[in-house]
Length: 159
Image (cartoon, rainbow, N blue to C red):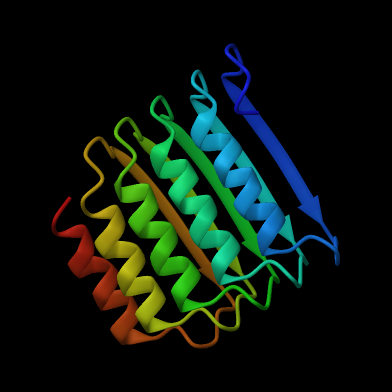
């Protein structure tokens, strides 16, 4: 990906891949960060049980470093190793994206995502310099409660 000078849209779907883990997702993040013309990214992870916080954090860093990225769709469903640290780091990375305008994040059946991660996500996204549209869905994330949602809102006050 990083060598491409013309790729502007990337759509990837990873479903039920037990051998995919943090190293692969981190490598994807490095590739995305180096793709000079990339503006639109759509990535889906469904039942990838070895994708965890480290991979999601590195993906967030890569997305944040993508200089022309304007639109992101990220869907994480039933990846049991993704938790607060990964979600918070994702937000921090996306907060660094200079041109990111439109973000849609979906977390479904993320049993390890709770209040701290969601608050951190809001803090990171709250400083994104160009963010105009944000849609976040949390579905069946049992550890998420009042404190996380309030923290998300607190982070958004900075936007």
